[in-house]
Length: 556
Ligand SMILES: [Zn+2]
Image (cartoon, rainbow, N blue to C red):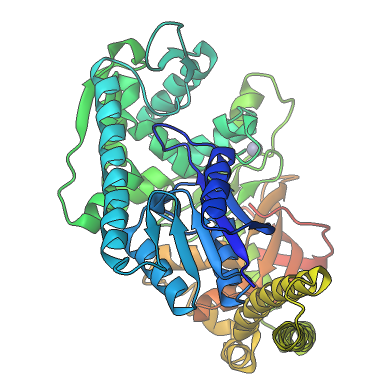
């Protein structure tokens, strides 16, 4: 018995869109002309899909149906419906032929006829040529629109798209409220503020991002976003083409030089050339200055301690002998009278002392044991059990599919709808379980005994090395500390020579980072530490503290 299937695809890339219905109609006519009738359950169609991607959902189902021998004739409107990639459509056709499935294309190809291979190659080649032509036409269209002064990309922060009737292309208009933020960001850069600090600042003031309007957009000001914004030449009235991440990586892949094209757009200028170039002089650098632009620190405690009142990073002041820590924002708002009091200055020595106390406490044998117990526990239960369950379910689904396939093969039940449906269900289940098992295996590869042993072998005391004895690389230790102490806040400063800190340690995260693995568990330990000293010189700080329970510590 002949079971006849159809594959149809409609894509927006076509100059003359042929709807799925049109294709189906033609396929039905062709089927009738060959004395065949189409099985309604074997109609596969992908809407609005480019032919050059083989990730088309129904196309994948079609391939699966070929494997399962669910039909023996396939009809398509044109060869190009199968795909615009020459090799893909040829190899698919050959596979059909091998499986004994006849392919009929309404534009004149029938694998039942003699010498069908040459027309197959010619038609597939023509389909691929069409894609190349299309890409070229799109590129020409973009170049033309840019030459005529139109914009082709979505507007960045500071602009919105404007579409005048009767014009062929989009234009932008400046959103004044956003434009003033852009100018402010440049001003902050010129004052030497790092991208990190600017992002923090914008967040604190509740300035909303462009992504805030979109469901999946970024709702936060990230340092990288500030960095990209400052580098965007549109703010000095020039549209740069070919400098996006995408264009640069594409050019690198092809091994061709990166040739940016510049288009003058004076109507979109928001800052003058000098401001733009000076702001970028500071970003477009490497090494120490670049680190400065981003806001990471050469100092051991740099950027580590935050203000307990407003959450911003404390700044360092004073001289090399006695460095002070303070919150510039709170200080300013206090000066301006917005805030009646502020936490005031403390010294870097107090912070160091509190950190040292916390670390000592964290590294006591009892604490190390507690942590290692937690690590072991995270591996013992959970992943292994889940994986076994999944393996069992997958085994069951496989058996089920084999049984159903046999049923179809050895009885004359090819038309038995319940069995065919059950089979496709079982296959679907099998695919889902296989994917899930793969995920679990990948996860448990992280959590297996080897990884556990690797992390258990790390003595937490080794994480920091000789931290307070003139560290050779403060920047590196600073990075370790940022991971190990995700929360470090100055929460109280009742009087001179008295400072209260809250420190949360993430030992699991730091251990995992130390061995280049993934954190096996979450183990946050928080201490409240009071550092005290006297006016007597040299100033010596001593600390006392206790472990406290903190609910959902904010990781900043
Ligand atoms: Zn503050």
